[in-house]
Amino acid sequence: MACALCVLVARDTLAGELDRAVALIHAVARLREVYRDQPGLTDALDALLAWPTREGRGHVSDSFWSAWDAFAQAMAIGPQSSARCSTGRDTDTTAAIAGGLAGIYFGVASIPGQWLSGLGGKAVVDPLVDRLRRRLDPRREPTLPAMDPGLTYSMSDLDAIHDHREWNRIHRSGG
View 1 (cartoon, rainbow, N blue to C red):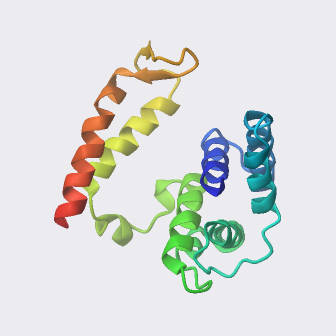
View 2: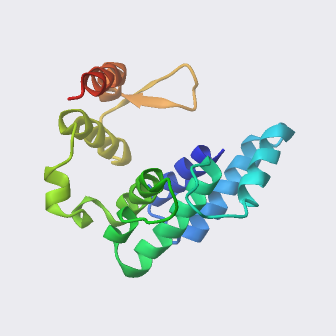
């Protein structure tokens, strides 16, 4: 549920929502709509929303809310602060989530050059980022209907399975 909430917040942010609280409200409303007939999932959403701590303890709910707070800090004092989380024992997860949200919000131009130049797996990441940019561009190439008529893929998305396999190959080999 935390992953779904994070993805929906990211989607609204990518679409131009600049108020993180509004993005969260939209995400929660969307999840309630999607899961309205599934009480176990709405209970999970309620439990996530009521999560009492933000200590970076490694639990997915705690990681999400710790990252949410770090994202708020980034909005207040600067984007790099989100990647310098010192909350609890699971700082890498918290920083990854917060850094992802801050990166979407502030854009790639806000990432220090030395961080970008030291990025591992650029050969895999760059084509995925380019494809995401094309998906967000209304002038992107034509789309083909998928099995779900509400879902479409651009021609360049058809090689996503290959990209995923390539990422796994590189990741497993340590490259």
